[in-house]
Length: 629
Image (cartoon, rainbow, N blue to C red; front, side, top):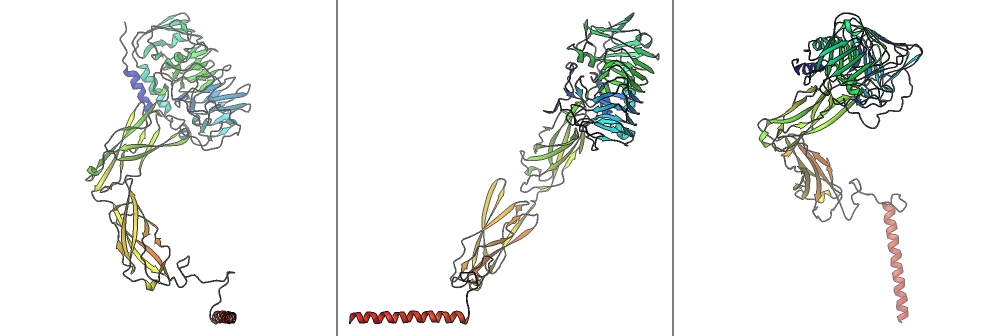
């Protein structure tokens, strides 16, 4: 009976997530080298879920099923895809130069593939990052992010030559190594440290070698299940089986020694059931559990034409791969993939860390009201906290409603690890008797951690118990041709109206014709909007009133300001020209719109008309008298 391995190694390994740079969140703005139309997106309907749960890894299939922006294939030296190598699923990160030069020509897919795990970076995110130069052979077409909405972005430290189709995403060149690999510039250190830590895991099971077969016998209950195998024995092995393993628990095989390794397995089974058959329903789960840690190997060949099951970690090796791999492939030196249609399928290791799937986390927020007027703020007062972050090349914004009583409110809890969230408080509530100081947000910015829910506290100080308030005053101005007929002490009534906390308030103020300023309320909260109406105009003999005007028409209350509103009334005479449309007097015109006759000419015409009427009256009188006689 072997001692039980503690859970702490797996837990500690997850701490490496903080060192990881989770890529694929920034859409490049540059134009792709070619303008080839992207294939029809397979995931256009809605965003894919992030990372498969343990024990639910998908089998090999044609459609994207989950997103994962952690590093799928890493090469610390130069990368070469040649012969008839076909695909590299997930994020491909190359520290040196990357060359895609298929002997027979054709398409090489990166990021998303024709048939694979379906665990791919988010559309528009980085799927290929090259610290050196990117070279695509003259008969090879490099497709990045095919069948993914938004395609796959490419970042290159040096130059790029050849045909690259990003399917609608961008490509940037000349960035330099660190910027091209960002935020994974230190990934070489990450895989070295990860390999060393895993190599220190206590052994929990036994590896029984017999000819070309090895049987790994586990110990129920241990997590992870850890085995060792010497480099001197592994090259002869072609058949691998695991027995007595707890369900879904990660598996580690630490391969120790410095011998060159040429490893070409063609059979994998768990508890007697073959799992490397592409039709197996547990294919994905088996691949995602197994990790081969080649701690000191300097030359590694993963050979054959079969399906290699499990992730490969070889921080000091130059590697060559001719088989199709199913898991992470993290190589510290050069990597050549040159098989007959071989592919790298992206199954994150369930043990986590740099080999695990991109993890998620979130944040929450709460309000803290302080200061001398804090007691005047009702517990149910609502505050608005705005947040924003970048995801898949887009800026995402949202709002949380926080209550003054300090209730904790959850924000999104499924943000990818490494996402940076910024905050801003907007539209502070207006509360009588409360003056707000500058809000303090702590922390001001949150970087999402693995399975963490970071609490953000928004503190609002009340600087004093005085109200941030102002007011308005009114004054009368009387114009028009009959203004002199309006006594100076004539009183006019102005009605004002405003809303406060959903309630409409009205009031009246008397103003005198002599222009005396009448003060309105001076304690209205800052921001209050006041409108005005004049009612019950006074009746004065010889005066007809025009439409009153207000300047300004409305008032928005400002702190410690008393805004003067002028109310203008036009007084017109009922016997003379009345007030015009602009408050002046109208000038009479004839029916054609010409100015009416005035002066002597007008008087003469009036006298002539009167004489004609008099003559007609006399003649009528004479006729009546004659009839009477």
